[in-house]
Length: 123
Figure 1: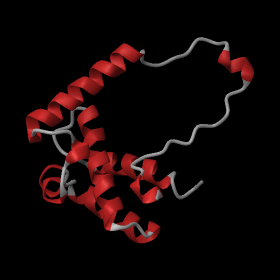
Figure 2: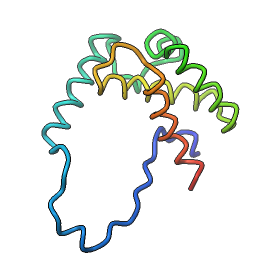
Figure 3: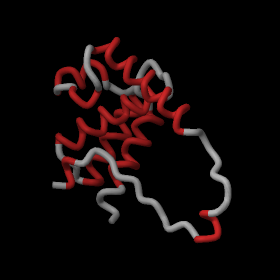
Figure 4: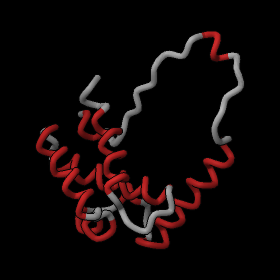
């Protein structure tokens, strides 16, 4: 069942005193605009969002650079992932690259996608 969940983020408990302080970081409107831009980039590139790509389309649009592919292969072996997990990580890495306006999937994007996927096994 967990193999079908693309990402999970573990969040630690925040001390009560910290909840009353002003938050730092981007506001929701800024993030929403970046998401909309990434989504539009996906539609322009392949006519659909990354989440709906089939296996052949993943091979075409989500192929990482050599370092990213090597990292993903090592993670696959070490974490005993299925082919489904492999393709889901690639789609997530492509989305991370889109969020950063990167033209191709690189090792850094694959590494971040692996971290989101690994959280599923570490719980």
